[in-house]
Image (spheres, rainbow, N blue to C red):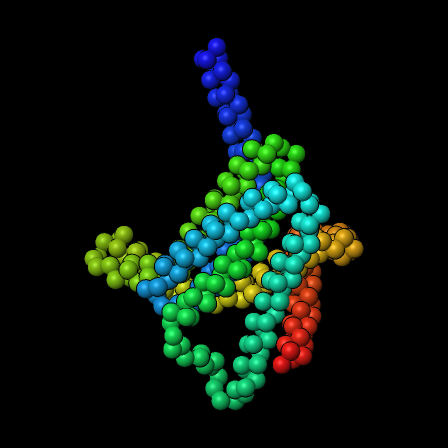
Length: 308
């Protein structure tokens, strides 16, 4: 009897783990877009940090991301069980916050350029006197942004496993949270240390074919690293609007229906319509995110003026 009970228990565990593996695979596909945005945003968040402090900062943000998951996974299950109607409003609030942060960055950049009209063709970076405070602010901002993106990943995953048992839901959410965090911050670390890898390869000595190829690869990485980081700054800001705008439009059914109609109309236009149709929702979500961010910044500025 004891042996039969043990075998039954092992069979149940194997069945749960099999469901978790299948559901995790489906959830990973569904959240791949958010994962790409998360990668761009977090790589952009750690720019400007001293080279010898990049990995410690990324590690601190990764730990903060794990703490976010420890909060979000049980919170998502509790909300889904007791007040499921609150999931969408909470996600929309997070999306609006992302749009607000993105537009605030654009606004500050515009004001900075306006204050220095013809002094120099290069943008002068403000001098940083307190690097500890600067790093702390970078880490805090990155963890705050990660919280919103993690909430969307958890919500999407929860929607996929909503009809499964509680144990399957919990294990799937935990697996997605761990895998996504390790994957994102592992790639972020690789991106920000790309210039160091290029410098190491470019300084290799020797005349062999492999060494010469390593040096060429190193010089290529050194040339590409600044362009990649600048691109990630732009992509990260655009991702704020696309992710935030996408969350808002999904919560507003009238807007999401109009975007779906626009996608179908573009797909029917020409031979390249299907390819353009795939880009249409992202572009429209981004534009909606810019508009929502502008409104949020105007409202917050007005509230701050009234308080002062």
